[in-house]
Image 1 (cartoon, each protein chain N blue to C red):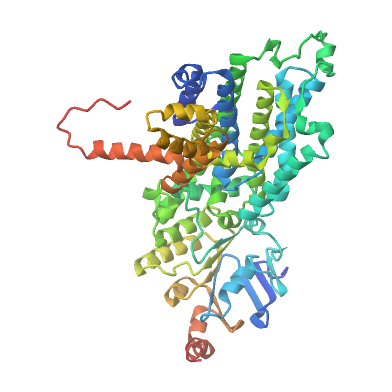
Image 2: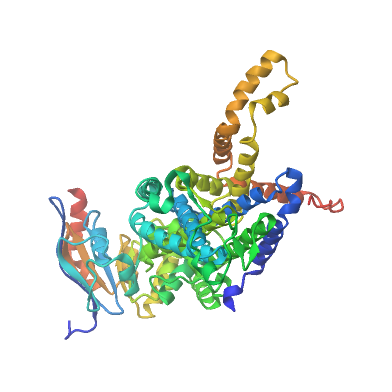
Length: 256
Length: 382
């Protein structure tokens, strides 16, 4: 690691089995700082399991995940977040009972005040710094007109955009995206791609799990292909696209 | 000074609330409820419910053991009267501190679980406190006879200041002013106003928003970088301290502490108050508390003779039948009435009385909004 300081996330020889099922075997992954690393693969390849191992939701049977010199394995979700690793979920996890604006302000407080602080003195309305920051973020994702709406009342696509805003306002060092455009219309997908490209230019590292090849090839700098719990191919998008093993995994896998 | 600031809307709510509370002796007169004993109860249980709502309304953790903290507050206050001084200030401060310590311990253990398991844990702890008060801890609680003042109590602080032991039992005082009747009520009212202000601050603060976010989605909360357990524990301790303060005030208005205050029915009552009034609203629990205490006062006073008089217009045979049925709902059986009211509210108005008020307001708002603007504005209803 010392000789290659630009690697920010190491997945080191991770192995995960559920009972007799080997969900992940010999996973080695190196994510470079500032790059977008996509993990693709057919259904049941272990993509979501891998993401859950990285974020500490599922402990690996063997191996470790190291982020910028810190072992993530065994840490609690809020500790991992405070290190700058932030996750977007496949089904949007938002605060349905809070307003859209409060949804985005909450993570900003986590960033400013840390994991726990009893902040009672100053009313929310006077937190103008965080409020402005949140409004700015909502403008970026196009939800600023709906800021007073209860987040639970948003459409599914808007909930996804809201969750993305909630993650981005924390200016994460590593952003993990689990199928960020699943269930979105073509139009919303394109808007999301544009948004993610904009973040790319800000130099944030991203790991993205995706089904939609259009999304993957528009965003990824590097692609790892997962099939049957193993990484079967890795490389630049152009390399992966032509790889016969990848085509077999995608096409052959569906015939099996 | 941020700490004393409320947003304009909340300031108006606070001022209205203060007027309503302080004017109780006036507006309760037509209801026949303007005597100090009952008004003190109104104010004290409103305080209890407002505090309980900080836990239940904001974080969604349903505690069934808050009466334990009420009891701890009462015992602490009475002991302060017995050992230190008849002044209420140390009694209330100690009641808050001790119930805070108790709730820290009980909350720390109970909050390892959530949902129904949390509720059962708090219930178990409260019942433990209740049973201990009757058994092992009788030297402290005086068991079934309740903890009472005695002329021979030490009262070291009073003694040091040269207060002469009188012939009769001393009564609680504040800076030498005895707190009987209306003075006691006004003390409780001022304490309630301060506590209500603090609750408003909690609701309006970033901390309050975190608590609501925990209720809304705990998973997102922890993946957003918050350690949710200390947040819930802080809410638990704050509401426990409110309960202790309420217990202390009960002892101030009547210096006597019995274990029945800690029984699970008392814990259940504050849950009913909160739900009846409106969970998660500031005013709702207050209204719930007042309504329940008022109905209790009316219904539990009824007896068969009064029922016979009420239904005397009916023919004899029918009258006996009606009275036989109705008598089950009054006096000792008034909880049956409470149960019915509670069921009706939960089924038809899940958001409690506050939701009812909101629906009425919206119905009026829609009607006036859609009405053609040809007529001059009607006189407002209020």
